Length: 147
Image (spheres, one colour):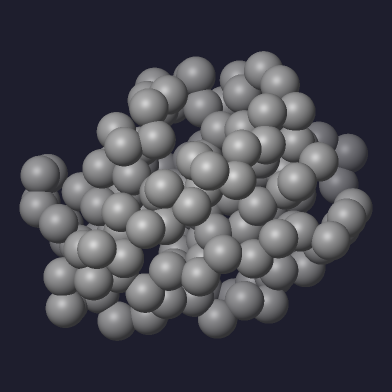
């Protein structure tokens, strides 16, 4: 699985949205996340739209909804605004899809944000939007226990 937002062939520092990224980018917000901040989500979405990205924000409606969205959404990339549990749910949904899967991006908004810290994601909304706009992509190595 790949994590990030952009095209697989993006060069570091190159913007991925202006005109050439066909497909939508969906931000899935978990309002129950420990540090949910709709202003941050809106800022990131708007910054990406100003670079001609097609961005839509969807709010999760409760347990299991993020996984269902990740499993079924027609999008180039899905950005999860939530905590580690939200990310886990999205990954489980993405793994139920056939390839190619949407790219997965993380907007850390949980209480601890362990994965966001481990990935070195910036805490500034502007810097985080820049990560997505530059197409910073890395493999996400998964482990599966007990099925």
